[in-house]
Length: 275
Image (cartoon, rainbow, N blue to C red; front, side):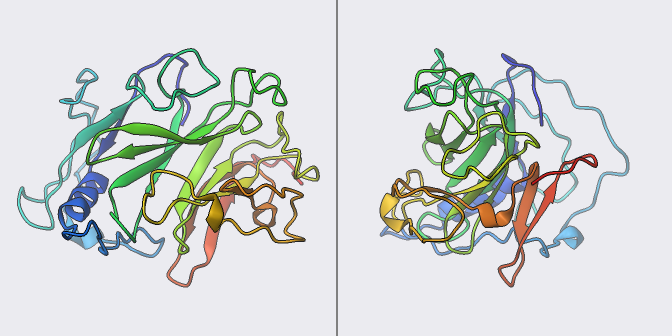
C-alpha cells in the first residue's frame, strides 16, 4: 500500500477488531490470556458470513475515531458471527517515543500490513504494523531523515508506540506473528539503497525477526535473541532485532505460516532478477 506523504489514513478493524476485542475481554485476573487468534494461511471461515452481493463504494466519511469506512457483510449484531468496525489508529495520532527520523511526533505514513500477538499473555491486545518508508538519505548517519519502522498499537489503552526502526530499513511491507512468539517484518525492494552492513551479500530486501517480550509484547526483549554463527549475518549485537537472510533477499510482500509452521512468502518482482 502506498500513500502520499502527509495524507491522513486510518487503520479500521473489522473482523480483526472483533477477534482482538474478544481476546482482550477474556483475560483472566492475573493478566494472562491464552485465547489464540487463528490467522494461519489455511484458516477459511467463509461459511460464517454472507458476502456482499457486489462491490460498493467507500461511504466517504471523514477521518476520525467515529468513522465507519467499510460496508460490512451481514452477520448479525450479537454472538461470534457479528462484524464491527472501529478506528484504532490514524497517521496523525501521536507515537511514543517520537520516531527519531522525523520532526513530527507521529508515525511516518505509508501504513502497510498488520499482525497481532496471536497467543501468550494478552493475546490479541496488540496490533503491529509496518510502514513502507524509504531508507534514510544517509543510512550510516543516525541523524539522517528516513528509514522504515514497526509500530505497535495497544487496543486496550489506544496508545501507539514505535517498536523498532533503523535508518537502513526501507519499504517495510509484509509482517507476521511467528509460532515462536516473535515477529517477522520484510522489506519490499529489489535494489536496496540502504544495504544492511551486517548482510553485505544482500542486494535486495531482507526479512528481520523482532524478539518481543513475552510478558509485554509491546516492547523488545534482547535476551530472547540467539546469535548463531553461520546464519548469514555478521551481527553480534543482541538488541532484539536480527536479519534472516535464509528467507531470501528480494522484494518481499506478504508472509504467512501454515499449521505445520512452514512460512510462505511472495516477491513483487515484475520479472526482475534478484540475489
